Length: 303
Image 1 (cartoon, rainbow, N blue to C red):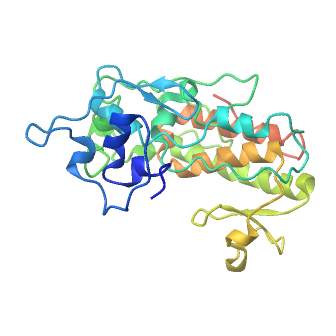
Image 2: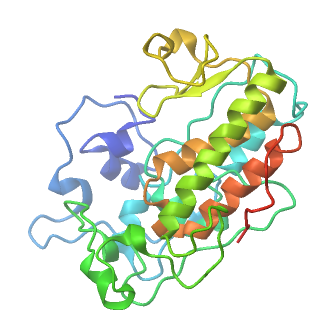
């Protein structure tokens, strides 16, 4: 397992990282061990982590919640506003650049989502403001407050007392704004996020065809996720989903929008972790593409 992956994908990677600050390559392991998170198997004390460095360079953590901070070491993604800006620096926003390739945030970057603009895991557009950490009520503020530490199962019973629902996807919080413009102000934030993702994908496809000059399709299950739509039918056909057909007509504007689309796809609990932050980024991505292709922002609401 390469050194860049072992921290989260081997049993001994995290302890090595916490001890040394770096990782070396390791042989694969069959899952994680107790020793991955527990520094003492007699008392079952966990490694104490006061703060975690995110891909943006920000050092963040839950105050006095060192156990939950262990989760942040892996659930932070591998890219950020900072790294994406570095990749597109000095390039014309709408000129295809053969040196650009898709930036994959990686998977389940829940910690970065939760900390919002402090972590900058999502791509944040210049001149826009973004919400900070999602601070829930006391007792349901951290990873381990809401997820079982071992099974990762969501503790839905914690939601029922206040929200009176049996499924977090139904939670809307207090806003009555129709963020996605579909006319439904009763649906949960998940519904708002899902529609915004659909609108962004449509804008990505329009821009790729009309500006970048090469149609694009997305597959959620095949790396690197974005491929050339060779028959321009708007669908990810089986013969198109292969690495040799990866999308290769990236412009900075298309890349940042695709990055945010993938981010929203790969943090499936983003609507809970920091729903308004996700919606802000999706809205801004649609609006940015809308400077070059036709999009309808009249019914959308930015939090």
